[in-house]
Every structure is written in C-alpha cells, then in structure tokens.
Length: 148
Image (cartoon, rainbow, N blue to C red):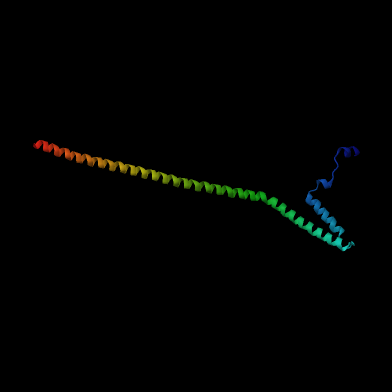
C-alpha cells in the first residue's frame, strides 16, 4: 500500500473541484458557523448575512450562466438556419432583380435598334425622294431636249 501511495499522485478534492462547487462549500460552512445557536457579535452576524446574500446571488448568477451556456448551441443552430433562409431569400431577390435589369437592358437595346432602323428608313426615304425629284428634273430636261 505504501508503494502504491508513493507512485500514485495525491488526490486533493480542492484542486479537482469546480469554482462554483468551492464557492457553494464555503457558503455552507459560513451558514453553519453563523447559525443562531452560535453566539456571534452583531457586526459579525451582519457581515455573515451580507456575505451569505452575496453568495446566494452569485450562485443564482452562475446557474443562469450555465443555463445560458446550455442554450447557446441550440440558439446558434436556430440562428444559422435563419441566416441560411435569409441568404436564400436574398439570393432569390438578387436573381429576380438581376433578371428585371436584364429585361430592361434588352428592351432598351431593342428600342435603340428600332430607333436606329427608323432613322435609316427615314434617311432612305429622303434619298428616294431626292432621287425621285432628280429623276423628275432629268425627265423634264430630256423632254425639253427632245422638243427642241
């Protein structure tokens, strides 16, 4: 047994305990020492009550933090799902907006082509009118030459 004890590390519950367990243990010791049957000076009893209240408050806070630590992974999962859904909606909206922009651009391009074609047709019409006018002059001149 002595050889085993020499080889085995010494186990100390104070080093292995969690901080909240140590705090709770010290609170229990304080409560035992401050029981009414013990005679304490009023100032010590008052100080003991204040430390006891603070200790209980700290224990409530630690429990809330531990509860929060257990809930955070669940909340993270929910938040990631929400973000994923929002990203999908944003992608869909962006695709819709992009398609609308493509349609407007294509329509503007078609309108520009139509105006360009209309301008070319107007130019051709003017040229044809000028040609017709010149043809009429040439016909009159030819007629006048034939009559002489």
